[in-house]
Image 1 (spheres, helix red, strand yellow):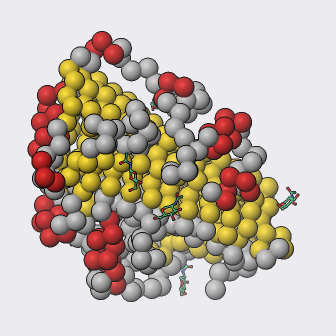
Image 2: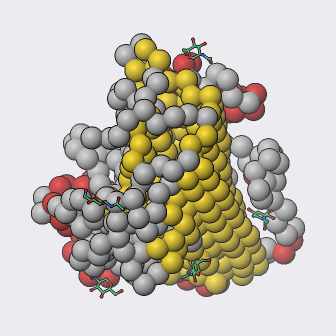
Image 3: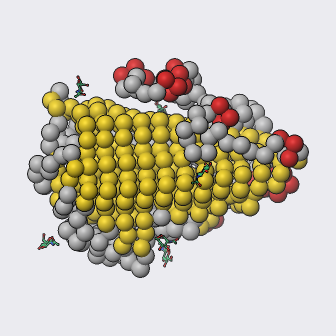
Length: 446
Ligand SMILES: *[C@@H]1O[C@H](CO)[C@@H](O)[C@H](O)[C@H]1NC(C)=O
Ligand SMILES: *[C@@H]1O[C@H](CO)[C@@H](O)[C@H](O)[C@H]1NC(C)=O
Ligand SMILES: *[C@@H]1O[C@H](CO)[C@@H](O)[C@H](O)[C@H]1NC(C)=O
Ligand SMILES: *[C@@H]1O[C@H](CO)[C@@H](O)[C@H](O)[C@H]1NC(C)=O
Ligand SMILES: *[C@@H]1O[C@H](CO)[C@@H](O)[C@H](O)[C@H]1NC(C)=O
Ligand SMILES: *[C@@H]1O[C@H](CO)[C@@H](O)[C@H](O)[C@H]1NC(C)=O
Ligand SMILES: *[C@@H]1O[C@H](CO)[C@@H](O)[C@H](O)[C@H]1NC(C)=O
């Protein structure tokens, strides 16, 4: 953790304490929700008293590496209301089939062991479950109200066996790599409300690590995601977390090392926070892609990112919309969608060897297609980036490729202190930015 000594020294005292106490394996230490700082929405959370959860199910491991999914589903059926579901310590639960555990209520789920997904690509491509957006699919749909999903021994592991997927995807034609049909997300939270997810480790997710859809009032803290491809190739679409039709979701103290978006907000993501987190080697924090469906109006509003560090990522923060010209169909084609990205605040960012601090691109299109960058009618406005420091690998602070059909406005950048090869960065690249605050566009992107 090079960042410990270099970049994060200026953060609040309690974050320093956490980092100082970090374990060598995961690079962070967990703060139980009842001791978490109260500045996160939902923390500390007051769950119902323990006496209301007297049904306790210890999930048995299927013998001989057999499929534990049926036993897991049964445990949630028996103890998923006013109960506890416990995955035992030192156990490996092989998961060879899809799971749906929804409609839970007032339940504690304590993951003390490891859930390990099978590498049987053909099975998953034939059986993965629909997520409900962009033809995405998943290995596990999980939802309920007042759910506390955590790891009491801080060892809870979700292992996706993703290496087989990374190898498989790298062998596919370029146009199929991005969203390979029915490649599963590790877990999808659907209809998760008033809940806390904390202290879990996610290893080599098959695709996106987790999706939150139709979810409201959720705090996810002390989460470690490491989707590193062991063959040093790109691992496309191994996002840390995606939000879709989600409101009031807080991500705090995450560590993400992956090959794509760290945390990303897609269609109708509102009131989302990302705090005190560190991102390694992926693309940074993303808004979008969005605007893929010509018949839809979608929004990303009220996003607050504070005190995050980026290490060898592509961007720190970015926004991506599809062009205004529809080419092909989802998942890998589309465009022409309308909507708005509005009221966004990114502050206290530390960059280490990052290409650029703030990137807007309204050129997303079907694989292989280029151009039409000035056609998107998707509006981006009222975005502030302030208090950023560190090093970039391109000689500009921001590259804002907004669309001529709907220029960006009220774009603010304040107290930006970046260096490129030892020199202070003073360039801001802009297309179709109609009003700036705190900086001036110096040239167009080429
Ligand atoms: C947001 O969610 C948290 C739980 O994470 C809850 O405590 C808080 O009241 C919610 N805020 C609003 C405005 O509903
Ligand atoms: C994606 O879903 C749409 C329906 O929403 C369907 O028309 C389309 O064929 C699907 N694409 C693929 C590649 O399955
Ligand atoms: C969790 O997974 C990591 C990486 O595979 C491993 O090092 C660690 O021992 C696992 N923890 C447990 C409790 O199995
Ligand atoms: C992620 O795992 C790789 C090994 O697979 C390791 O080299 C790297 O340091 C880990 N990243 C973090 C942030 O812990
Ligand atoms: C997304 O948000 C927009 C604007 O509030 C709304 O019109 C639309 O119905 C929402 N879409 C869904 C699927 O909820
Ligand atoms: C978009 O770009 C094309 C060619 O680059 C140009 O002719 C057109 O005027 C532009 N439209 C707008 C709205 O800027
Ligand atoms: C900008 O950062 C450099 C290097 O980290 C530091 O020496 C300098 O004091 C900073 N300037 C301001 C105005 O914060």
